[in-house]
Length: 189
Image 1 (cartoon, rainbow, N blue to C red):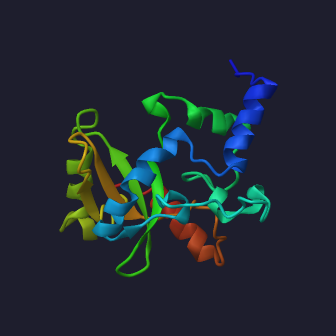
Image 2: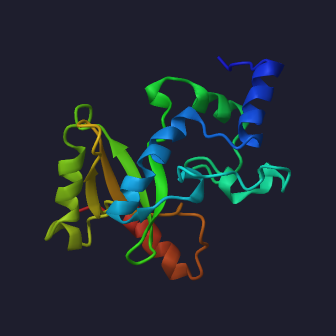
């Protein structure tokens, strides 16, 4: 069943963005930004504890600002998405966020994992990211660069992985590229 937002709720969600406030679902990232920077990862300016929205004070349209992008959403969030982010439900947290590795400027994804709920995910990910499995041509798993233990939560780790893009964001230039893509999708031993 689709939730229907009242006019007041829609206005509140829009004002949340217009006034440059973070959603509840984003607070983890803001609160841990200094620690992540110490670990060598830089989040977008939106998650800096001293962030002031670029559009505050009438300096621009919040809908066109880079720092209006929420979490992994690469567009200004819809009212339904905004409503989801304001709930107190822990399931509505932003579990994956992009970052920049300070050492080399590469883009990475940080993924929250609760080992008590997903006991084997870290170990399995490390196994597929370690030699000799990591260099096996049949291994198409996303490598884990690093596992960060969140200092103020014993049941939370962050997996650092390369930032990937959707398979269809870069068009195939040659027939050979398309054939190789299909071969890897249907790879069978």
